[in-house]
Image (cartoon, rainbow, N blue to C red; front, side):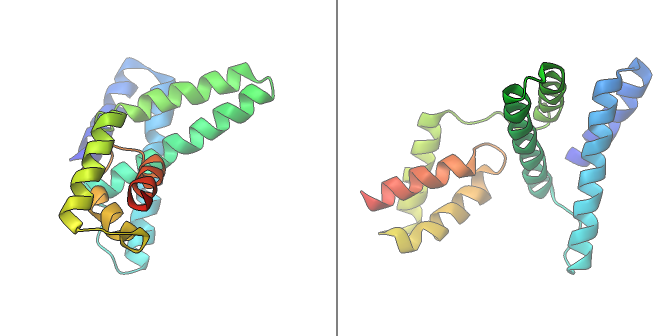
Amino acid sequence: MLRDDINNAVKEAMKAKDERKLSTLRMVNSTIKNADIDARGSGKPPLSDGDILAVLQKMIKQRQEAVELYDKGGRAELAAQEREEIAVISAYLPKQMSEDDVKKAIADAIAETGAAGMKDMGKVIAVLRAKYAGQMDFGKASGLVKAALSA
């Protein structure tokens, strides 16, 4: 389980005295625990591995936005710190699909759902999320789905 992998990595980072990795993994654990508490509050079970992957992707996206802001503001040391955190968090995500693979997956999902127009976009995205959680950027994928359905 992904949660166990992260906890084991925390222990390894402690032994190796790798402060950046340790603080990043502790932050990841904290974010996952908060998401678990939110899920419990709304009567849902603890996060599955797919849910945890979504949390990790959100964390990476937040750090990428911060890197852009720090670069614009001339804060190279803070941008470098965020990039290091992205590298640590990315290690727990599955390999990202290439754009060609994403386009093929979208075509397969459209065929599978029988989507005919924009009103079926939700069905296609739901199939993609179920099959490819953590493997593609759904922000970009939704644009590609929109283009495929409107063509």
